[in-house]
Image (cartoon, rainbow, N blue to C red; front, side):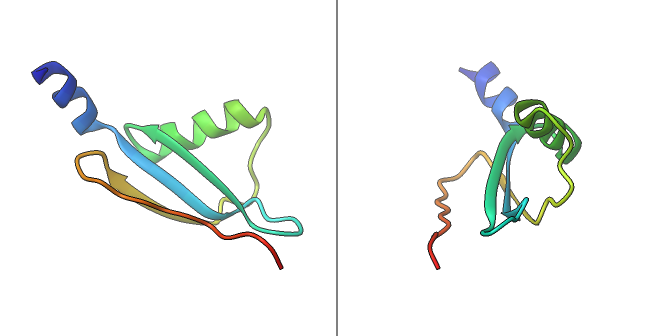
Length: 73
């Protein structure tokens, strides 16, 4: 259990709002050790380079959080 706690303590949740906007703003997230790794993971998932990242919030993984983005016009 200590090993798992030590491992997750190094990871953080990276959340981008206003991500890659077109007609509406998108949302992207990654759990990673730093912002560079988080961006790399997202670009690997997307399959190509992200040009507009939007607004970033970083959350530690040692507390409860909630985040939501409303859609619509």
